Image (cartoon, rainbow, N blue to C red; front, side, top):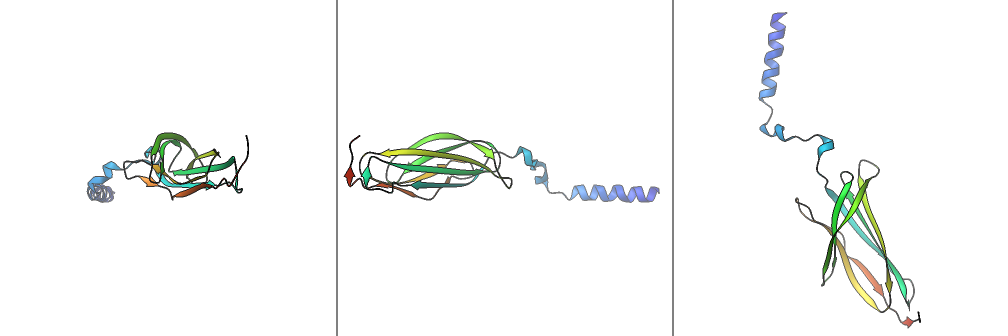
Length: 142
């Protein structure tokens, strides 16, 4: 019996001595820092040539857990606005999602592209470029 205990103890010591030094840096799944894993943007442009007209921008930021996530909106060839903060909420399949839907009223012809930027220590995430356009060929009063 003593031989078996000695053998088990020896195996346990050998097993723990072969664990890499980085094992001390392991983090429990619930303690991982909040990180965005994907960002998407979309714009629903007016379907009419008349103005005023409305466009809708939607933003989706996927994160590894719920919490506040910062983002900025960049206009192609122009300014970057932000940072702003959205709250990511628990979603399906272990992912969390922060969403924003914003309406814009177009009062004159408009043609620009936008993208969403999520700044992170491990590298910034960027959405695809999305096009916001209104021709306003027919101007209505009001």
